[in-house]
Image: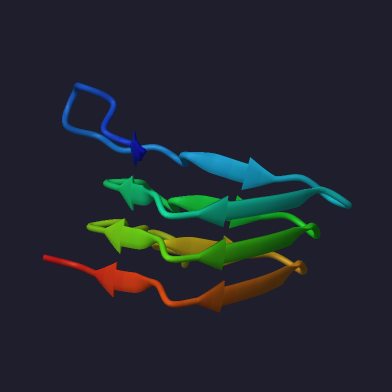
Length: 82
């Protein structure tokens, strides 16, 4: 499965957000072209076997994953910026 953050107008957007007290488990997928591919706002993100391709946030941090007080666990994943 591929999640693409391109908005069709040359811009990008956040693809997924983990809310406070939320839990998101992701496996074997691709997150691409997100401005902050995934934002974690106090919840828990577990990632295994994922690819993060060309995600970025130039203004205020982030990129593939922006963590704002949550927990992020990653195993066997790729992070590539071309």
